[in-house]
Length: 109
Image (cartoon, rainbow, N blue to C red; front, side, top):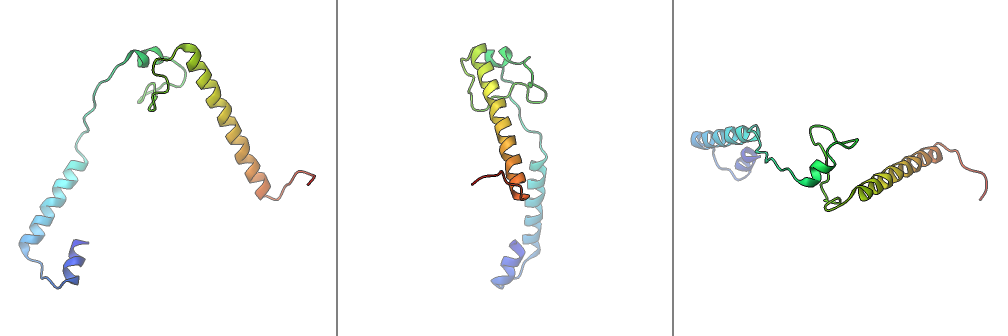
């Protein structure tokens, strides 16, 4: 993109421009593969639900919205039940969409 910009405004690229562009590209490429810093955060909540079904590596117990902050076991089980119910309803809705598009309709108006 930078080279085409130079052509459009009729500026002749110099070797120093190319060298600085190459150095900037190398720095950006090296930064893309640098290891990310990961902070070790352990809370009582994470340890409370860490052994539940579905908590697996590499994320472990994953609650990005914090819906289970200060939650007890009953709240956890309720949210799990509701998530399964909504997932099943979404699957049926998708199947209904596919069946309807295939031309199959229920009798009646």
